[in-house]
Length: 139
Ligand code: THU
Image 1 (cartoon, protein in one colour):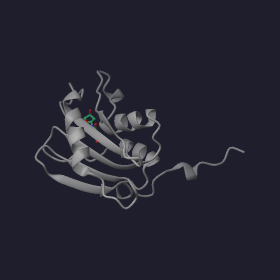
Image 2 (image 1 turned 90 degrees about the vertical axis):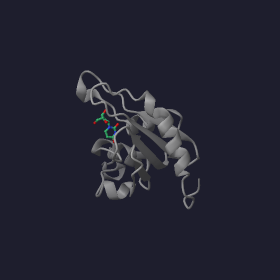
Image 3 (image 1 turned 180 degrees about the vertical axis):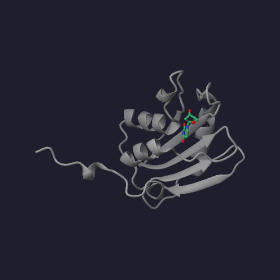
Image 4 (image 1 turned 60 degrees about the vertical axis):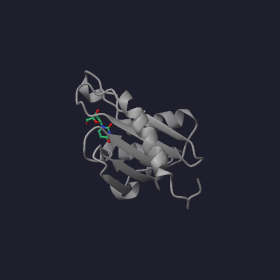
């Protein structure tokens, strides 16, 4: 996908919805699935994976990013997040930061089970973001 192309949102949402039944959310009963689109056109899904030690839960977005990174991806251009609840799931703060690492120009679409859609630029969700340029060189 070139920078000027619009992502195929329907395809990404379809892939996220296909993954949603795999969400492991026995504690919150709030399933989430994400599909991230790499700049080379490949897409990767993730679901939330909860844990009896609640704080170890990993969100759908971060699992999708991990799947992309495992496949060698370093640049993401779009993400769709769907959930079992009626309202669109906006990515949590931790996920915003993790998405930023690979997608400073990422477009995010959230879709609730009611069909309500929200659309964001990640830069607007994470103003004054921390990034690698703020790390001091070690030498
Ligand atoms: N969750 C996600 O997977 N992504 C989000 O963007 C928001 C929250 C998950 C974490 C937890 O398993 C459940 O939703 C309830 O917070």
